[in-house]
Image 1 (spheres, rainbow over the protein chains, first blue to last red):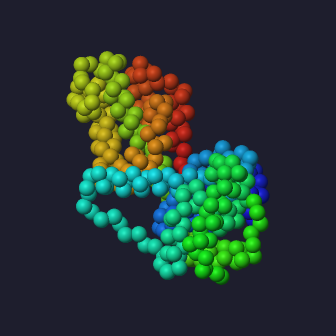
Image 2: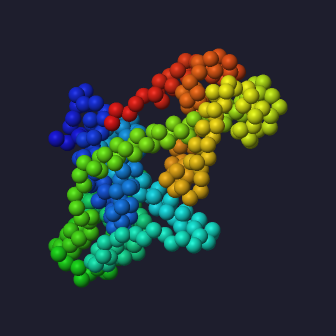
Image 3: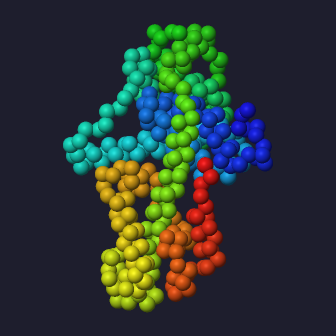
Length: 174
Length: 167
């Protein structure tokens, strides 16, 4: 049973939230994983942070969008926050000339690395649009809501992303 | 948006299939989320309490706290305005507060400074909640009503912060 369909009257907040996490954990971790660039530990971390935010705001969810769209928006924002945070840490480490090496990131290798490299070459906007529409299968209108941009802007980012990736990864076929 | 060619669709299916994490998440993930929510709440209480104590100490200066300079939470002349037990609580919380801010303790200090801006964006009423809850003296409110403590509001806030997470 999907969380969207459960009456708020028969389940407690905690029960509904537990079901929300179970229903969407795989989807949100996968989304964070793709947006962050195949970094599994960070993806789980970000997804858990997103669920924490969702818990805080669970009572204010007004069903103007689907739970999935709402969660996606929170997760995308959490990914952006994480990326800003790591960028600040990186700059701080550089400024302070700290000697310690950053914790090595366990990434997936091989073909994923090629895809990841091509994805990294995209702008953040292009990357977000491409992943949400083409890899996560969301509608452009929904992605526009999630990203806080107009559908036309999302389409424009999609077109550029697709052109670049198609060029970089043209030899990849299923 | 123009429809994709079948060639593009095939290519995209390849990317989609390959570019995703391996493995399924189980209920351990839910437990971790639950644990983090509870830990976040504890941390918030700690920070709120610490913030409240700082305001409390500052406010004493304007409400008969005397001539003690501000900025030194453990100033004995500030502490002298409190009961011995309250003073011990202040020590505990200031110690805890400094630990939260110790550079290098990323799970603590970094969270406050970079990761959780909402934690430092706290309302004054909420700050009072922390101190009243932790010091736990109704008399304290009566004695220090010049601080602006609205008994009803504080009672509501205490009730809120005492609410155990049901997760």
